[in-house]
Image (cartoon, rainbow over all chains, first blue to last red; front, side, top):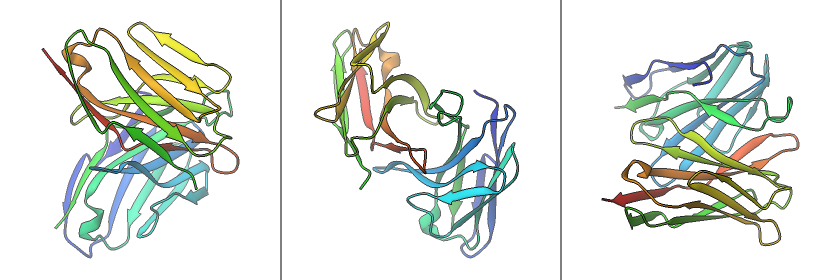
Length: 115
Length: 113
């Protein structure tokens, strides 16, 4: 499982509250990604990081922010949760070709429900 | 823009038959094409991938083919078994400044015993 954990695994929150999801990896991978998965849309990239304090937006970044203060942790924050952010969130890691591998490996996911 | 189309969205086959899932991509600079299998309630798992300098790759009952001219690639599963039932996602790697995968919308494969 590439040493990736996500917390919490399940969360129910109310509209308008802030929420932070955590992704933790143990193998010092350079790249980390946050995706959301919704029926009919597959996996869509929210934000990604290519190093400590280096992050960039993906295709569905509105309403989300990220931080990476340590190599092993990548945090996703919903500043003010909305019902449209109800989804399953996956973290992934990769070397993105830096050490020859482009493979991405996924964490176990976090199911977020915004009521 | 960057896009991956995947067909069909659902596929039902009899046990022992073959299954084929097809994807097309938009950026001719893409050079890496993975396939993921996702069982219900689980994370996507990488099952096979292919680089742009290879036309075909096999791993036991699964194979992937790539046609760079037509910008499409396919997953082939032979001698399907009930445990092959899952959602399968293709993806295309877009390098340069972004280093990201763009995913297809998935194919739900049901293998009927």
